[in-house]
Amino acid sequence: MASARVASARVAPDLVALCGLKHVPTRHGAAITVAGVPLALFRAGDRVWAVEDRNPYTGCGVAGGRMSRVGRTPVVVSPMYHLVFDLRTGACLNAVGLPQQRLRTVPVEVVADVVHIDVTALRADRAVAVGVSA
Image 1 (cartoon, rainbow, N blue to C red):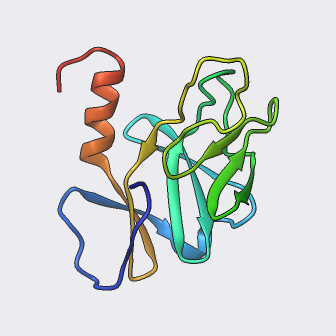
Image 2 (image 1 turned 135 degrees about the vertical axis):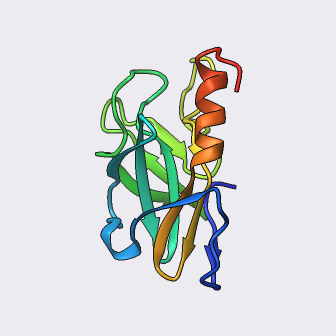
């Protein structure tokens, strides 16, 4: 799960504060770099999702994409070629005839209206992605 809403002000030690909830736009993404990884944050109400800011098909960023919904599924429409990605799983929902590729998702928690990211998971995922032992 890439998004969570936590009511208590207690924060796990592997979470790092990024920004206030109000600083994440609701119609498009916010680009941010964490631990050397470019990310895109998307928000709907008090829910936030983080994905790597790189379309796996084109290599272009997705932070400039439009956030929307397909049914109840939060999605981002990539600015290049209008590919639609599920923000919860990273799956591309309209890559007809293309091999399935996903946006990399990153665990997020919102605690006391502050957006936090799991940097330990981010680093571990990055090490696996580039073939480095974690």
